[in-house]
Length: 245
Length: 245
DNA sequence: GAAAAAAATCGTCATTTACCGTAAAATTGC
DNA sequence: GCAATTTTACGGTAAATGACGATTTTTTTC
Image (tube, rainbow over all chains, first blue to last red; front, side, top):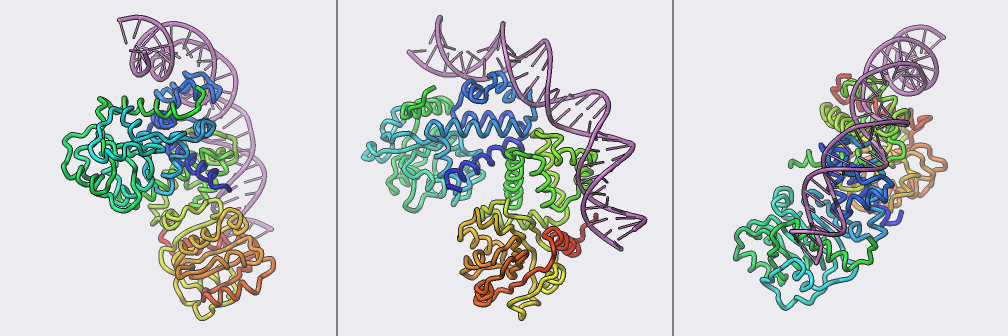
């Protein structure tokens, strides 16, 4: 079996498993639909059902979707993404070897063409703290992580793997206290091309020092809400693609 | 999260995913019920339903089990195994790091106490070909693999990982042509304590040579059918345990 | 080859799913 | 702040699930 098909299958199984085991399959379906950046209408169209059906699941009116429904759902969101160049699936592919728990992932995607760090920062109202000289470097995707959740479930080698999986990409940490704990895990060559912190309570001096030492650009996003930032990223993502929605 | 719970969760997700994505959820449910060595009645009892319900799924009268059903099913078979000492779950645990496709696995289990190679061979009418001097070594479990399937989907490093995952255990290869292809993959220190071939069409001289060189006991089972052999293993497995069925 | 164990069959029934369509509410874009 | 987009809410319907239990068939065991 070609490796792409294998990744696809593993991702499919993971999503399907998560939905079936969830206490609220609908919520989980929504999580994945959103992870794939699909409005209910598009998904509904692809499934050949009316949008209210999707809503009925997600809002919990239908509490126990049958395996057929789950299968159809999973295969459709993956196929739709593949038809658009596989931005999400490919981004997941680099995570798959890593066994990162998906619940820490808020958003993930590749860009269809590389964009500069500057462009990304402009889009999410980012203020650069260190590494100004690298603003013109190109990045090819991003990963948004719930930091407080990640600190709960990830060991320091877990963080390391996260860094490795985001090589040439932006790692966006939301829900950050000081930024210190994730950054200290950084050692080794392979690491993200950009760190963005969001929702920092009190920025730690050490955090900046670490970023300097490791020569990774570090920025803070001034967006009010996480949701807002995700939406901006989504727009950016779409701009790079030839998606026809 | 403790590592045991993590393994449990991953296994659960994998099974649930497989069922939901299957073209025949019922067949897949049966596969897993059998993997856990549970008769329909016991499973039905644990689920608090009548046995015909299980049969209705497995035979396909109910074609699209709801997520609730899948969840209950998966959690029940795993919990039942854990209550019996986790013979199956633990055996899977050593596979989990390895990403072995479960469709090549026909049967897998730990023993509650180690048994000698001799004992195992007696139980499945095994004839030792090489490594007679090691008959008194203890083994702690077994893995039965469909070789023709494995040759299809496993690379040679895949086989290597299989060998590593069966350290101190018996690796039972059924559906074998010559035995050559799997054995040539063997290099390195970590490997099963015993190879058993079943259904060999024409034993290759090289196969025996390889086993000799690597000093791994090699045997052939003279059981007529695979099913028969699996049943014998099942009995053996039960003897080592304090299961109260 | 009979007894026991396990699995399959199937009629039946209450509950839910899977679906539509429409109207209302919420969210987002400028 | 208004238009556009997206999501919910909900009444309704046919089909399927989820369940039982009695009976038959198949498989295993001694």
